[in-house]
Length: 136
Image (cartoon, rainbow, N blue to C red; front, side, top):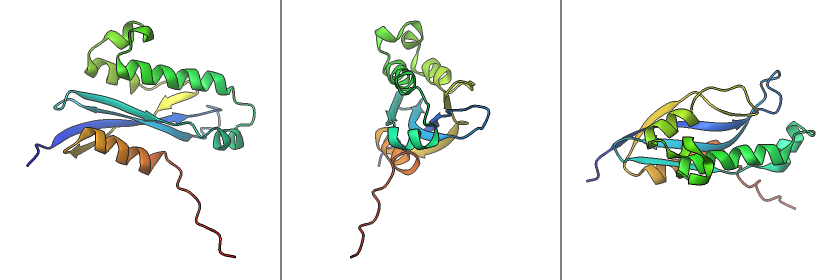
């Protein structure tokens, strides 16, 4: 039987106008210290974001989301933050900020497989299900 792993996660949110506090979920970052795991799943639904904020600077948002992926992966091109330990990178990624791309408050859980937990959380929090088929 697998050993359960505790984990912390944040939802990556796009907040096009911080003054209005309207948010759209765009990803999940999950950290499991016991499994030495840090992973993220990010997908930006540009049409939904444009419906929420028609004037949003999509390239800037995309760059910020790409930076999260790179720091999470420890990509040397992401600079000194990406060279920190897994724990320090998660804490940097989950720190509150008042930019267009923000983490939610941290949440916790327990799982056998952090990768599967990340996928499940992404599907539940970010992925938009296909609309039901229309009956004619």
